[in-house]
Image 1 (cartoon, rainbow, N blue to C red):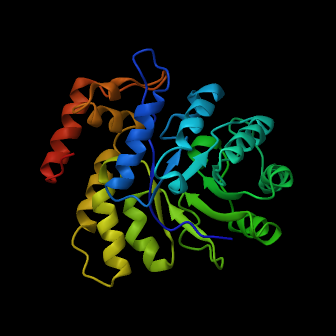
Image 2 (image 1 turned 180 degrees about the horizontal axis):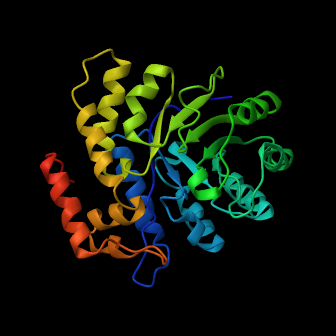
Length: 288
């Protein structure tokens, strides 16, 4: 199994004026993130409004993403509640050369560790040649991975379960598994996580903080003094006051109107909140 290391952005999905996925500009956005410091980008995560996009739009993007110059730097999210649709989307992704997936357990229904183990087991039984980063985000799906469940999955499927994105933050300080990627979902956990043996981060705000986050990561790896971590954490604190998808789209729309397009029930920030966001970021000497 191969680990996922470094700074990963949870990539945004760019939409056209009809609120359809703009494939060209979504891929351009992802490539720009890698050009600006990210080791890779998670496509179709929660930040990318994956649960709100149609399967046909996802397939359309994957068909073009396979021609991206950074094809090997993408982690493909599924963003689907249906087990069968998840299996089918993985089939299509594999046929296009993608093998690394970010998969969250289904939302809405209540369940526990045993049911989660069964969910991933069924995916892997159909696709034993893929690698999966578990997506731990209780706030969205209603389930929070336990240390015991993760260890059981890794023990049973050591070649397929390669890491976890920890956005519930109950794992990154206590979970210890050899040759396994632990990636907190916030820049505020980056340096602390690295010191504890984590592999990096996968975060929404790396859509705008990629250069700073990469410097913190590189300085840690090279045993250099940290000069940007405090600023990085403060920027994240500003964004944490808002819905991350809404605030990121609102900020990026300052430069490009297309980011004003967002799928209901999400919305961009109102004028007052947007002005407050920009003012607070300016006070940290942060600009796009």
